[in-house]
Length: 191
Image (cartoon, rainbow, N blue to C red; front, side, top):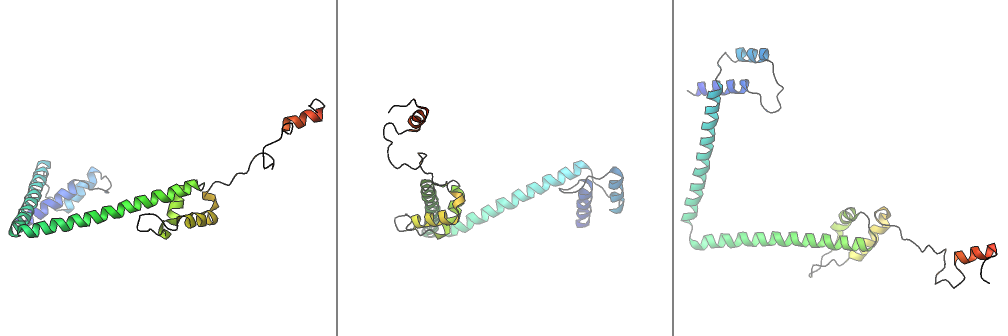
């Protein structure tokens, strides 16, 4: 009987192409069937075998769950409670780490944006490993990290823009605007 099943599985493999196989012509399939000894199974038989395989997988899964339930039944209520509490503590610690990582990323990105950052993701990746988180969840060396990133990779930041007033550092006096100067040069200005 095991030999029959092996022959049937080989025939099933030869009859239907597997993922990644190249499609074969009918002549190639006939040659493969001849090489396999001529024993082939019908499509119905293949379907029946697949259904049986699925049923067996389901039975194994059910048996495993029953075994786990029986094992849990043998434990005392105290042991089950302790295991649940330990799992809850592990989950809480994992969530704390994730929350800290998200808050750190947000703080770095906000500081980079305030410093004129253009590529916030790249700036975050550049400085995240050097960030020193304090007890309150803040980043102790954030300003220094952003300043160093700005110095090392100025292409990630917008250039600082000066005033477009030609260098004047204060408000212009009346009659000292560009229009007034043009009018004076043309002889039409106020004197």
